[in-house]
Length: 77
Image 1 (cartoon, helix red, strand yellow):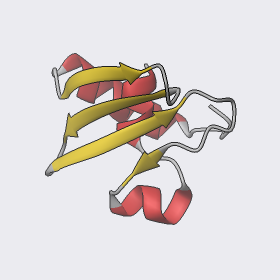
Image 2 (spheres, one colour):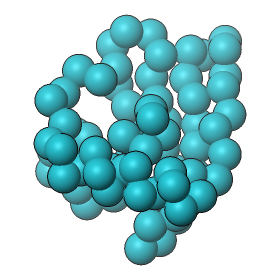
Image 3 (cartoon, rainbow, N blue to C red):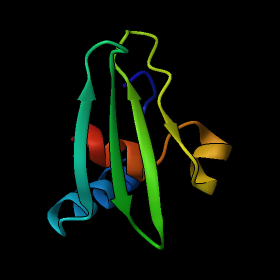
């Protein structure tokens, strides 16, 4: 992760993982990405960039503000 993720957000991400809300993680080795779905207040599609650029994507409001969120963090855990 290129960002310094606050501990509170890491704890939220761990809860998502522990509760089985990270539904699937599907690698696409050709594009060097991983796709996942995370259930929180609604279902979010997460795309993790494995190229070193770390251009991860989530469409939740937190991501739109901070460029990181508990959903991307949960998938990375």
